Length: 261
Image (cartoon, rainbow, N blue to C red; front, side):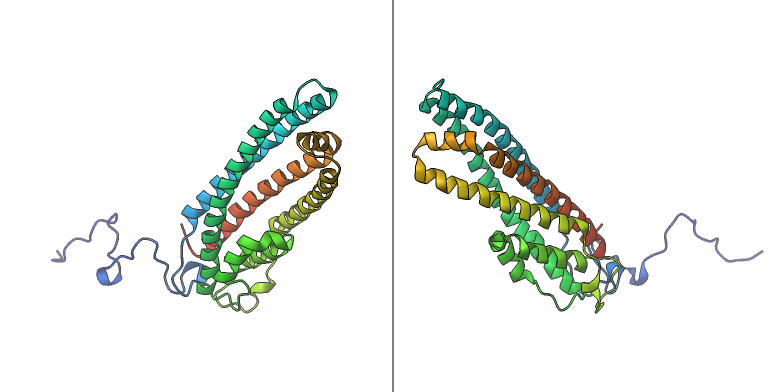
């Protein structure tokens, strides 16, 4: 009979090498996703971006519904069925919605800046060099990108999309030649459409202001150009819905690339 002790139970895992366990959130050098440096996780802040976008979409839908009501009131003003004071009261409610939307939009901008800056920094850890849009550029584009008809944001999203490809090895010199995301292109197309309608609405509004004054101006605009107003509102909602899908898909892609679980 052997004097050797019995083997340990099979359900007890072997001790880690060196007797140490990695801290939560640790990404090994050269581990999954090919990270070659510290990364910043984005899962939590992505939830904030999506949540704030959802609130903006809800307010956009509410504002569009209110515009339908305002058009009826505008026609009533023209027909003499209600007074301008009554119309002003309804405009006040619409203005309150616009203010709330603006406040949430500012919060979304701040969170989105942090979100994109983290991803841009993570691209460096993944060896995505040279980067066109570093952390500083992402901040500037989030703030001023709307002045470029959505072109600079498109270029930023495209680079983040390609750089977040989990199938691309670290320091892959061909990472920029990776396929672009369909959702990124869709967002650009919808944004350009919204800009065109916005320009059309703004130009018509400028002519109307020259012709008339006061609340009757707004009533005439809502009744005479409501098709453009409605189309612009619907398309802006479409842009927001597409963008929330872009955020989700890009975040999932990026989290896989940096091995965030």
